Length: 467
Image (cartoon, rainbow, N blue to C red; front, side):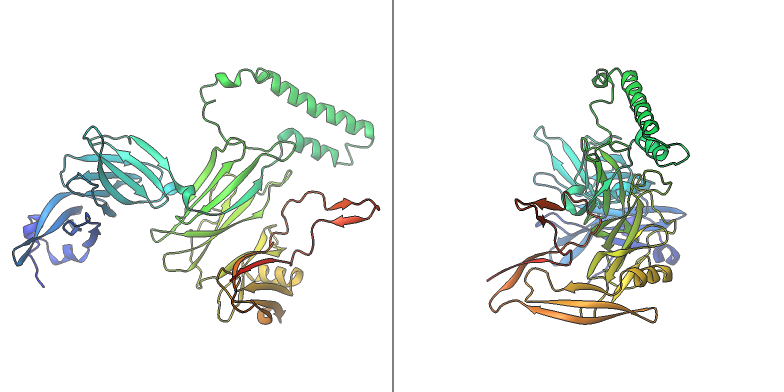
């Protein structure tokens, strides 16, 4: 065990109150290289960071200062790649701007500004050398954004969003119909307006005429490729008459929830979910309120994940903009779920309720939103309810549970068990929870004019086992 006087490193005397707020952060060392760390402290109202390297001299240990600079509240570091000496340190300058110091030299500095609410904070920085011999800095955010920086440059050389490489779940959102179709539907369902087939015929041609005028004003579609932004597709704000244009909402293990338009794949919005600075690992994505052609309430998508402390986190977002529905921020729940699914019940606000199974040993069902009104709506429309556990790969027993409402309180009891035959283990399982999924023709007419239904009991699941 050894120590060193701090003034030898920071070149100034730090009082006890200065040291109380200091923090240490380990820098990932070069494989086979010397250990490195950073010391961040506050002196005279200015936060500073010094990068330190541990050096062995004979049988003694020593510390050597690599760099010192003013810094924000976060410091991350990474190793240099082959052929590059030194380490990279990234510090928060202000807001979403980060500065990267490479090689331990103050002059090798790059600035990197981006939307931190979308991609998360910088969590790694490293150095690499190009074929021409130039040294570059590579940074990565907690949401999966990669950027290459040049020395003394305020703009990244390139930026690549790799958030979808960590995708864990996806849900489709039907976009609102075009305005003309919504207006036509409103008039067609108003008894004061539509009194005959002739009136409905006229309304149909009025809507068609408006669409024809909009098409003509755009140059009959011939001028679209000449626009400056034509090379970069933008997601449609509304759907089409046939329902093909949708939003695909993805959740990722790095905390990013993003929506892509199925017409061209353009990003509609993205948001990074974090609790206490650590990303939320999103596991499931649910559309709890769909687009209403004539309603004012926006569609809502809910992401269910886990915090760094394994607590359940539920985030409700506006499915068209990504804005949080609640203004009180993300609040971890006082439990860790083992399964999340949609419940066959709807709350007073028109949102579908979600179920969270909170304990694998003695399962209990928690209803989201966690309100008494939501539990009453579930008890009134869905109880008794059944769910199963133990259907993960490698399991040898599946257990089914029954949820009932006893005096307004939810109770869970074991209903059945299924043992996989000896010598085998479960390889995969598939169940269908979402009762709002779009389906095609329900039946097929046979030669004897009987109907063979294509969809059977939604409670039936499929299991695959292997030896």
